[in-house]
Length: 251
Image (tube, rainbow, N blue to C red; front, side, top):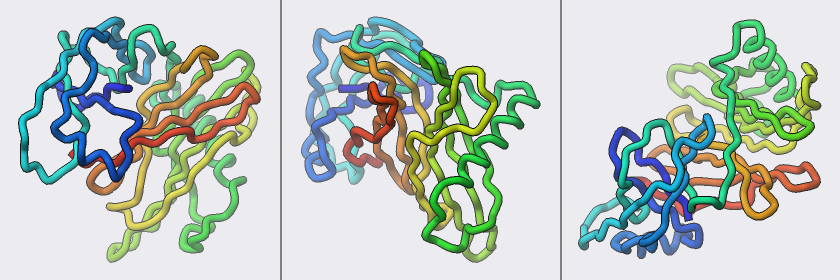
C-alpha cells in the first residue's frame, strides 16, 4: 500500500490500496485501512523526507458523500514537502532536480533538448497541433549508474479564445552521464483536448522499489475533477513502462 498527501498542512492522509479498481473503490469509502502497527517512510521530489513515521487509521462513519476517496489515516507527526509514503524499509529514495533550480544557461539547454526530443516522437493524431512549438511545463532530472534521466511534461497549446486546446507529452528520456546531447526516449504518453479537461501528469517522487531496487517514477494523473496514481518503472534491460495505475478518486 501507499500513503498519499492530501494537500495543505493537514496530517490526514489517504491510504492507497493497490488492489482497488474503478469498479470496487466505492466499497472502500467506509473501510478502516489495515495499517495498525506499520510505520512509513515519506518521500518527495527531493528524496526521503522522514523515516519510520507512525500512522493510525481513522475509523470512518457511514457518510453520504458523493465523491470517491481513499480510506483515511492520521500521521503521528507533521512533515512538510512529502508526497507519497511506503512501508518503512521497502523503498529507497532517488533525488529529483527541477529545471527551475538550474542556472539560466543549463535550464535553457535542457528545455531546448526536451523540445528536440519531443519533436522526434510520432506525430499527434490531432493535426491541430502540428507545427506548433513545444514548451516545458515541468522537468526533473536524476542520475542512475551510467545514465542521466529526465522526466518531463512538455506541452503545446492552441490559444483560440472559444476553444483553447492543449497537448501534454509525458516523456522519460535517458542519455549517457555527462552528455549534453538529445535524450533517447524510454517512455512517453500523449493526451490532448480541451485545456480545462485534458489529463495532465504531476511528478510526485522517484524511488527504487522491491528487492531488485529498480527505479520507478510515482505520478499523479490529473483529470478535470479527480485523478489516479501511477508507477512507471525501469527494468534491468533499461526500458521504461507503466506498470500500475490506481483506482480513480475525486475527493
